[in-house]
Length: 302
Image 1 (tube, rainbow, N blue to C red):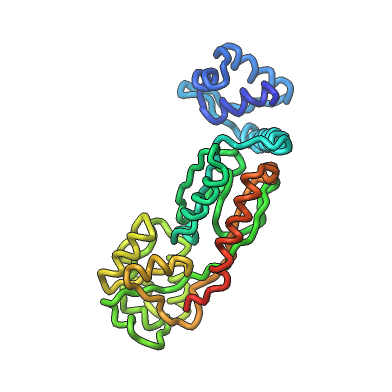
Image 2: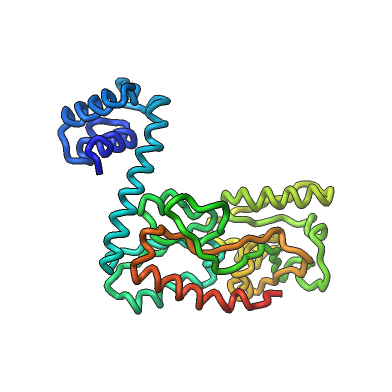
């Protein structure tokens, strides 16, 4: 990639000439000269220079968007060339959302590893917001999560399953054994939700508001879905979770309440870079996920 752009991107991200020079392997004077040359070519200053460092001004921020787009295209092109040569990936990084945390993600990477033993596979759980910028930068290779919004340029998606957010209760909750439950019946009880799950909180509040109920009582938050389920299994509290976690809930003695409609539903699947789809391991990953998700698509969780 162009040397001027590399220097600009490094300084923009580091905010410091010394740190940028170390990152790109140039002397500090060379980086300074490169930035000055770029600004001269563009006819505009890109940075505000202070004693604390260099920070993008308004023009610099707009140029950063273009520079990052160029960087992404360069990265996509290099990856596409490597994939066309059928090269093996040394490391495959996967981020899995909550719908895949009932053992599905673990089974997936186990099968993938058995077929591609020379590739190191890193699996990370990101229960709420699998990050697309990481995918664009190449820091992540596969995201398993909600298919919300149009994918950015260079990213493709593949639908795997539909997920519905349902209400779960444990044996200590009076609703546990009822054959007919409405969302209004849940109003007296506290909720346990994933930490920083603002989306579920917002959905619950709107649903309660539609029923003319007081806002839901969020009593506890936890950083893992397993912790949420464990707390509900030992209290009268309720939780909201996607239906693919039913096996985890059942292991803990929880029941998905027979409420007529889910809190909401969404499509979920794979996000990958289009430039990576030529790699055999990416192609096989999608095939394995299709096989593993088919029973979930067919299963009636009620």
